Length: 419
Ligand code: ATP
Ligand code: MG
Image (cartoon, rainbow, N blue to C red; front, side, top):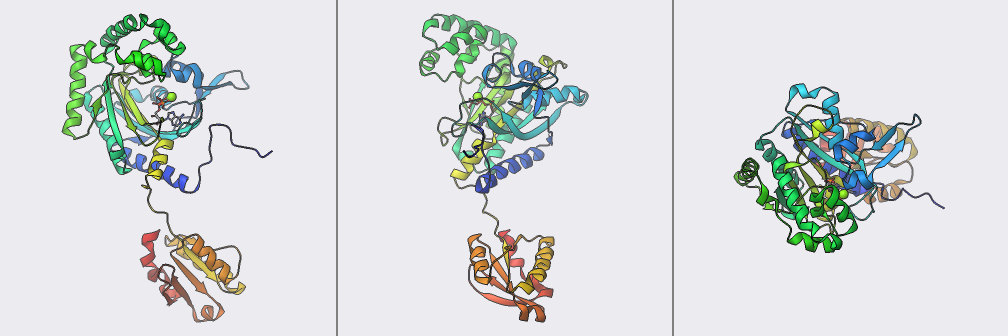
């Protein structure tokens, strides 16, 4: 039996990898434009980081984590998301002294889920976090960054921004009571999961994907009716900012995020082009989290974007930049192989992408050059070698010219645009 990749994992290569790297690179560059700096936290952390940081009642902690005891008997977990680790680092590296801190990350995360298109057990996220900024300006800035990123990927017209507020602690407590009163009337009709949520974290019921739950959610009380004046003002400020920056959004009063630590602003960018896995970027404000992980009372806000989902999207919509086209080197006769390798070496040094097959006669090599969609072929036989020239053939037009080796670098300038 051939060995298969583990369920829910995938090998990413060819154009899929081009799409993946296009998304990741674009995201990193955009975050830098907004004054963020990168961070890499470990792929595994003490299990406690996620239990405390993500919340015991979340789907992630209650059923999706890859947790194991190492040989020393300590419990570790492969990170299921990025925020908890970044906040752990913010505290353990003493960054609290220098707030606000603006960080971005990209990398693999692990969740034991039912795999399907756009849902993997090893998934990849790009995310940003702002720590130590309490004002709505930070919320607006983060949303603007997300919107610009989707713009740079060519995706703005395929997504909509849904926005909600979970209010401050006081608003949230009042809303929680209202939800418990409402859902308790229908307790028997709720899904098993939601019955548990009713006890442990009733807000999470609003996030249920169960069809019957969804019907009951239709008439549930709305967060916006339970906001304190301060929480309402904060939400108004965020909306005014988005309007001023001309970022379109809809308020979805039923939007709650899966994680326990959110306060105030929550948001998702959703597409209709990916079936059920439509959320491509999601985040919000998490003012209680730093304390939850043992730090000082520092507010935070951020988002996580699904690189896998974004790359499927840009690829299906034909938005990834054209593939680079190499220059193919074709030695005619074995004596020319080494001299051609020297030419390849020097052209690569000047920044050209050069491909030279490892074997084959001239016609095989030419076929190969066409197959990889090379932009031009450079040929050299023994006669040419003696004269110090090569033949450069444009593989689109078929035109060819003889060029002195001394002028080669310069005469290839017209092909730079393909690389
Ligand atoms: P969902 O409701 O789809 O399970 P989530 O609320 O669990 O999403 P977050 O924890 O907010 O997702 O993660 C941020 C983003 O990461 C998601 O919006 C999505 O684009 C991506 N993502 C989450 N889980 C997966 C997964 N298993 N496979 C691929 N991408 C994922
Ligand atoms: Mg999930």
